[in-house]
Length: 372
Image (cartoon, rainbow, N blue to C red; front, side, top):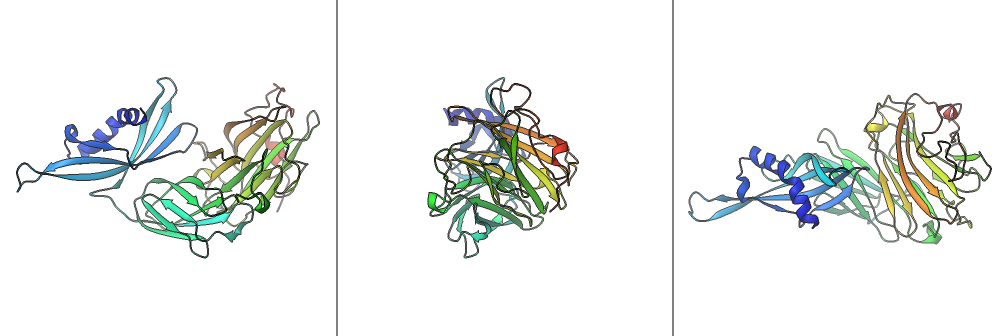
């Protein structure tokens, strides 16, 4: 059923591509057998390596044909009214006329220990290529098309992960991905824990993680960030990176902490553009929320009015119920011209509080006053 549905959604896009390549639409075959799908946002899904197979008559051998293959990466957006995936973008990634001009250096790090602990011998898949990282934890790819891709990384003793990245041919693409240890004794997640892992590109130079949560009082919230890495009694900042790429990692309850019970309330995660050029929207930022047991969520910057240094992207909320149940909701708000400082929710700390606590950006005033 999935293949039939995607075929139907893809027809107008592939028909346009076929028309550009002067192929006969009636004879074409769309092949999903080697495709890979990944969510890139709340509403968008990237399907990679959709193959268009077109038989072309051989002019000197009547009655025979040669099959020409062209491959595409197609972005679909979910339409909640029709419950359809609607194609919104197409990039050619293989076949006649494809420019294989992009290169990529993918660095794989330990999410708990940061860039000082690269992971060698990790298996990294990008496009149709799979390579192993070297002793420095780097896998170097060449001959790639300019397109949006998902990157998959797998390594012994680590939890596998994937994220999306856009490749260009203008310059080498340097990408970081961080993996959580799989063993509890090495910092892996145990029952009742969650972890937030941030990576980004070369610019901005310094992007900071901010997590707030309930401190057990009616209106109080702790704030974990570079200035108070072990704030409160719940969560901790494992890694603070100030020189591009990341990772920055927050774990709740703290890594290797004997406490494994999360206090009921709302845990809100935000990014702050502390310093450096560019902006969060073009930074290649990737936020991965992982739970013990393998459930994960990936967030990328939403469309918005980015200014640069001082922007805050409030990413998501994890709500913990009194019975320990958890739910995840994206917030995806952009706030401009905020100086770094204490970040707390303006409202209460329990899930029953209905005074605007949920889906809120952190207060601007509470970002002010901190310096590195």
